[in-house]
Length: 91
Image 1 (cartoon, helix red, strand yellow):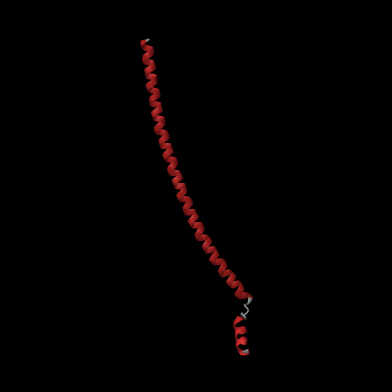
Image 2 (cartoon, rainbow, N blue to C red):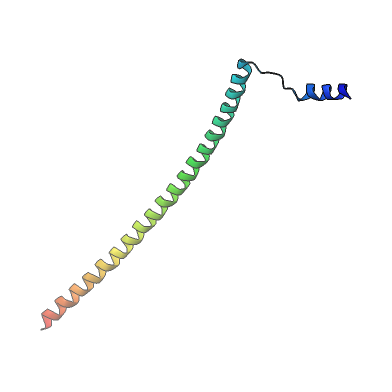
């Protein structure tokens, strides 16, 4: 029985890592994290550009609608002015 427990202990004992190995592992983990964050940043930038593009489209559409409304109002003012001029001539 003792040999089994000795073998079990040997498998449970971890091999000590050198400082170099620890730093290497930390560096590898950090590089992976940086790659992940850069990928996420790229996706966020793309989403922002899409949203800004939609905002620009909405703004241009609103400007066009405003121009159309302005033209209609100006035409109505001209018609009203013409009617008032015609009424004052006949009066």
